[in-house]
Length: 180
Image (cartoon, rainbow, N blue to C red; front, side, top):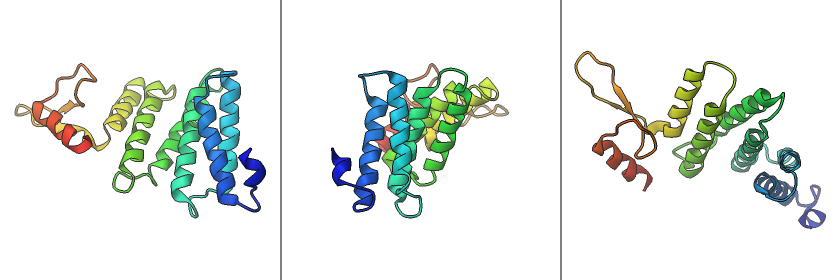
């Protein structure tokens, strides 16, 4: 086992990276009890954060926080469901301070997508507002405000093929240029 060689004292980065990798693996693990796997993921992620601070290893810190948020989302069951979901939202939002669109476009987009998922499941607050937050995060900065008839509010479009909302061909073309 890697953790017998990569001790925190001798190889702190490798020790933390191994814990991060274990956290990610336990979130996606198929075998065993789901809740136990998620607890293992949370435990390993928290250990990784003992070394990966935002100041010293910002990218690793953000990736680990992202994995923890995913574990919290998957854990959403029972009496504390609202608490876990709010924790996931908090983590995803703070991750976006490091995974910016300019510096980490792929990680930024994945985190926006995860945040949208969290808001669409959110218990706290107004349902309509949570769904609007989900749409905004799903689209990130690709939300298009199209011109409308005089005196009418702008129409919101979302990306191609994912919602029943109509989409202009120009917008679909723009999305394809940005992401593909």
